[in-house]
Image (cartoon, rainbow, N blue to C red; front, side, top):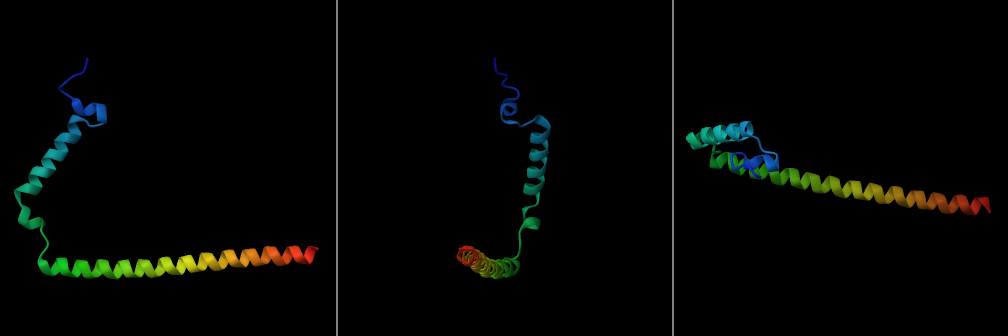
Length: 86
């Protein structure tokens, strides 16, 4: 028989957690203006995010190139070592 008093327990939610979430949500909703960023901050955040994304993309490409070169050098080493052994 299921208890309707604690339906969250089936999913790993406990009354103390729910109470803490409810308290933090009501506090956040009580003063929403304090939590909002200004348009100037938002614009600078967007610029920073774009800059970081470009840097990440550049580093990803450099890492892929390094891996490709490493694999090619390993293959060449394997080929030439085999021919020397013969």
